[in-house]
Length: 153
Image (cartoon, rainbow, N blue to C red; front, top):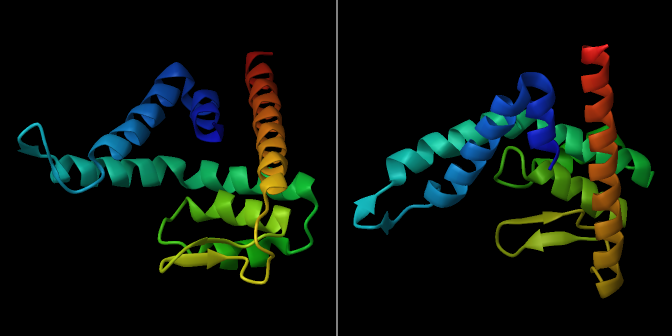
């Protein structure tokens, strides 16, 4: 949710649409395979790169918006280390921030483990994560509105 707001603030509706198109195209074409009798891998590579570029700054903003209000004491260096554990240039940032904020271990077996010292997540952590996510979107929306009002005034 932060990325479309970010691009809307920078470039207006065309910016938000551009991001959503790249993100949706990556989800649709970003995986190898034949669909409808055609090999879309070439389109998937372009869509994935466009999504990576367009989400680079927003992913880090999202991580900061998750980490700062949560008040975890790990610091930005720790967030950087945890985010680098994932193969994604962007996805690791919000996931690492949430793992640190909840003080839990998040993992994809055989791929990565975020916050390995953390405890195993429990069902109550889902509600806490939803609350943190809602607060993050709320703060991002207020910041976007403030930025737009600053531009319009």
